[in-house]
Length: 156
Image 1 (cartoon, rainbow, N blue to C red):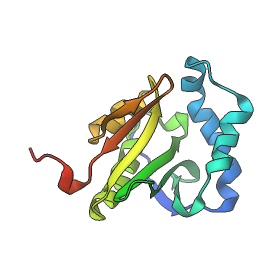
Image 2 (cartoon, rainbow, N blue to C red; image 1 turned 180 degrees about the vertical axis):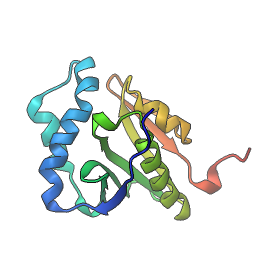
Image 3 (tube, rainbow, N blue to C red; image 1 turned 120 degrees about the vertical axis):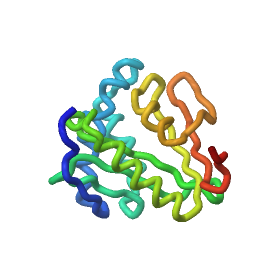
Image 4 (cartoon, rainbow, N blue to C red; image 1 turned 135 degrees about the vertical axis):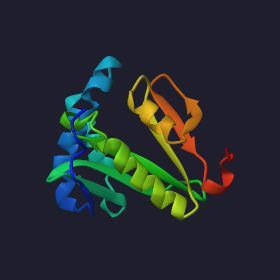
């Protein structure tokens, strides 16, 4: 494994949208193709339609190499983690783990649970499960995972 790159998080801006749409297309392409659901336009448009820069952080290592959105969920006391994409060239180097850990520390400090969904068969599911996420539900395309708030978690 190559060393973890030096990284920071910065607030997203409206100007980050198109670079993030391209990053999303590259990051999701293998899983979407495996599921027979890759569409050049749709993969980008879904981010454009759901982009909320006020809840999005840009992963800079240096330069834009990824993003993560962590915002309010429809369920009280819960955050929704979404749009967590990382340049495929940086996969397997520990960067995703480090960024996820930082986001979960923020949620824990606020005493909040976290929900997310991941595509069926995605290797990212193992990352989330290592960080305390458990199956909530699934369908033929998505797996919905939940990580309880700190006070709701069993102690070991």
